[in-house]
Image (cartoon, rainbow, N blue to C red; front, side):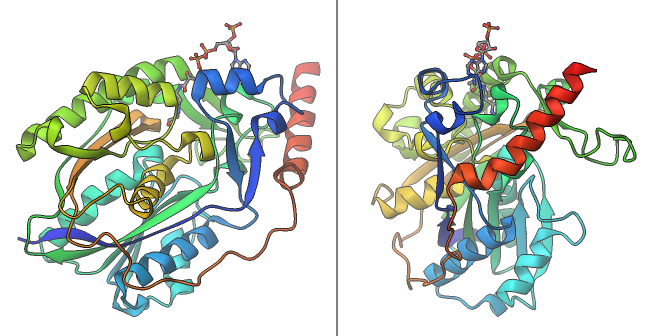
Length: 364
Ligand code: UT7
């Protein structure tokens, strides 16, 4: 039995920043409301497709592990905002990277996608089925937001992160993990008018709306993440005091504070970057992990605890033991193409379309 060590890591955030004040130019909201309710100050808006964010993250992760794309035997992509549903995004990234020997698999569990993916990839390495896996977690979620719905549009942003997993005989990588789903509350986060359950010849098709019960998700998030964290710690025989860093899903600063309080973890042991990027769904954990490494917050052999929740309502937690290397083996020069527009300029056609649709519906 092998352990799956994270040997490479990379992230990619698009440059265009959308501030709370920008949002208040077209939504009935304010910087004060958004900051006090969520801790979010700004988020990024992508000028490229999701696969481009994935490609750059992957190239950076491959360089950090110092392996070639053609050594990969699996590309797994966790996202709910794929470039297309046919072909899948993993195959697009496989092709762009030139990872010809890799199988290509997309998974969608929304915000828990990266931890679900880590759970699956670690098991595939443990059995010896796969030896070099690229796991990407990311979103181009601004593409799917309804810009006339203030309750959800203010929360999300675009980003991507990636890791390389390789076998190691030492006790490193994911020591224990739990994944689950509270499907009785699946309607608490729901994107409608898109998918094969919707009448595709109807006028509403593709005019996505978010059914969103933030309060319900908030309550369940704190409870399910705290419970899952306690279970993975118990399974691994590690106490919360031995954990060096908590890297949770970044949905809301108040949720993170409540989770830390329930676990009895001091604030300086919790990675928080929701203020800079908002909720980037499947990207939050790999991006927070990469930033923590770059800031020197993870040391060799550290225990790192992670937890997430998202649409479904899926939940997940994992306890990692970091390996001996916390710095990249190689630097990557991979970059996104330049962006010559502001976030508001990028979004202008979408905002106009959603507002026009919303006013057409209310006038009916
Ligand atoms: O990762 C998975 C997805 N993430 C989540 O589901 C996030 C979980 N939930 C949350 O983060 C919080 O519940 C929110 C930040 C979404 C909302 O905070 P809240 O304290 O639960 O506010 P609320 O939903 O109870 O809304 C309070 C009021 C309402 O007005 P009334 O009914 O009290 O008059 C809303 O209409 O705030 C109003 N409101 C807004 N006001 C200004 C809702 N959105 C906005 C807004 N700006 N953007």
